[in-house]
Amino acid sequence: MAKEILKRSEVPEEFTWNLKDIFESDEAWLAEYEALKELPEKVAAFRGKLGESAANLLEFFKEDDELNVRLEMLYGYASCKCDQDTANSTYQDFRGKAMSVIVAISSAGAYASPEIMAIPEETLNRFYEEEPELETYRRSIYSVRRRAEHILSPECEAILSAAGEMSEAPQTISSTFENADLKFPSVTDKEGNTYPLTGGSFVPLLESPDQEFRKQVFETYYNRLGEFKNTVAATLDAQFKQLRFFAETRKYPSTLAASLDRTEVPTEVYTNLIEAVHANLDKMYRYVALRKKMLGVDELHMYDVYTPIVADAAEEIPFEQAKETVLEALHVLGDDYVALLKEGFENRWIDVYENEGKRGGAYSSGNSWPHPYVLLNHKDNLDSQFTLAHEMGHALHSYHSCKYQPVSTSGYVIFVAEVASTCNEVLLMRHLLKKTTDKRQRAYLINHFLDQFKGTIYRQTMFAEFELEMGRMAENGESLTADALSAKYHELNKLYFGPDMISDDGIALEWARIPHFFYNYYVFQYATGFSAAVAIANRILAEGEPAVADYKKFLSGGSSTDPISLLKIAGVDMSTPDPINSALKLFDELLDEMESLVG
View: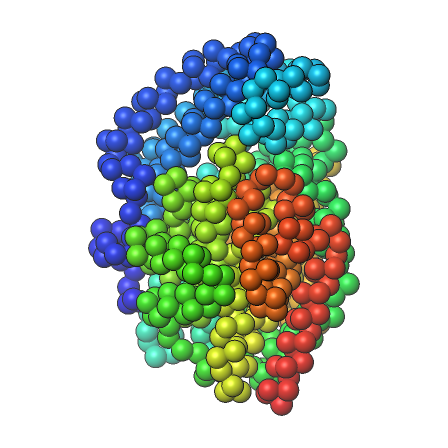
């Protein structure tokens, strides 16, 4: 596509997602919204009755399944519409309406957890015998009852549920500010070409081979962002205050424990990751030293971390070519998997290119009724080809879970969310390396793979450590000021990148551009997920069909068991640091190969 960023109305239809698969029109959405507004009363009608009979309990769960699908479609449509043009106030209103009805229905059903908790064990066993269909919901019932010490009275649960809408405010404010209101000056290269600087174009512009241009992009971006650092810090402060409120109210020892308990992940997995990465920082320092040498610079700066170190091997990869290559690479997952990919490509599951006001980054919606949706801001380069593979991994994980699991266990937890996406990336990389013996092209690809390790294991662990520090500050009653956050971030950046990297002043503000800090201890799972994905991909390529069969059982598992057990089905034990150490051993081996290729 051209350098010019189009208005939403100017984007060709074939590059946009087809949201008519969810609702035919805005009017149909509004009709469903009005219908759902009437349902809190229906939900409330079960109050006090869940423990009376097996029939009541079963009927409640069936109604809950239906409601969850309808609410997900309602919110999914509004959210996608809003993200395709964040400046469109109509769809901001739609998303607000959807969240309001979700909160209203959630509040009306706040009695459910305490009532399920109160059913005596012998009574519940009798219910399973009387209504065999209740077996479908055994996992859901267990998920409630295992958290007995953190469930409050029905009255308190209703208050906490009602407070849910307010707890979304920091993330909503941050997203609106970043995507709709925050504007950057354009940047100009030495040939006089002018480029719009946006959240979506920032990293691609930093891939330029011209160091002075990269410096201009970096400084322009962070100088502008720095003008709003206090606003962003205040928003993060509000985010961690609400996390602390909910953690303390539910009697958790920390915001980390509260966030991870929802997905049955022990906090030790989080802290073990940080410890394992600290123990392997020597490999990161070796990577930084190699990057400095290959770029031939006297000083390596933070604006030098994205430009390829084998730049002349870079090639333009149009979207059509990217799709074909992804299909080839993922054929090892079977004809059925490839057929689903084609269905997504051909039936407009994907919103492809950046447009004015479009949300930055990329994601898969997770909304799998009727199918998932993927948002991209595609550039015709290798990174975007990998992003396509990554997001379609998410999408097909959601598709499999929703197809093979009942509604109640169809949603997979965030701990396993990055495994399928990253497994696709690893398979794509192995495919591309297998196709070429050209030393320069091979070095270019290995550089990209090394950057994945750097960006996913090391960088996301650094983010995770920073987020852990923010949580501790909030729990100690400290305010998350811009100066305090910048000082801590700068310190961590120096630790993770080591002595050969100049940690420029601007990088101290990077925390202000990371939306994932509003996702409640999410980022560590990129690192654990990447480690698991490397192990799974290696097994698929080594063992073939048996490994693929186990992997598809994992993809189809939803939340039918805890995430550590799910990954064991695919042959990975994340309760140990072994997958992390193994992945970083491969990182070390790739560094060896890169050094031999470039002399």
